[in-house]
Image (cartoon, rainbow, N blue to C red; front, side, top):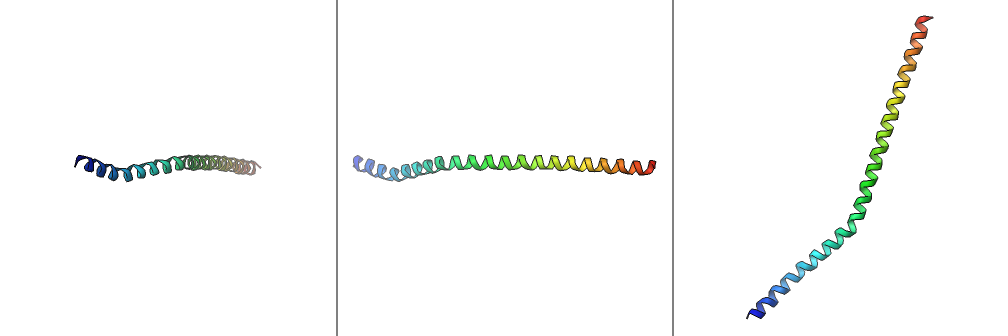
Length: 76
């Protein structure tokens, strides 16, 4: 009777082990793809930050040029 119980228990646990193994394999395959996506998002965010900085610098330069031109016109 105990042998039958052990066999039944082992048969019930095998599908769980196979499912856990399949999940582990799937996650291992997915990990490099997720790392790639994260690195692409970081590059995109860095590019946006640089663009915003350049835009801000351009705005400051334009404002300074307009201010200087207005000062020249007032002096003339």
